[in-house]
Length: 105
Image (cartoon, rainbow, N blue to C red; front, side, top):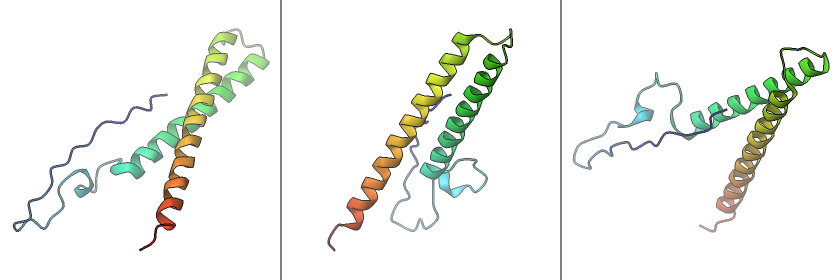
């Protein structure tokens, strides 16, 4: 599970006549454009890690000699850490939304 995000540094359009958007969001064929794409990718990776850990657990319970207990425990811990990180991000986003909605205009 790799949750690293690549830095995005789009060039900003100048105020003199530039009306088109410049940056990663300008190209519709990009797979993950902006924060929403990065969040969706991270959620997909966390889900895949949890599914992998569940599958390894089942294999250990079925006494498959090709799956080690150590590998299973590491996969479970990775899935748990990924889920906790996702939960923290969600809580921060809800808190930010609440703060914005409570601002006086």
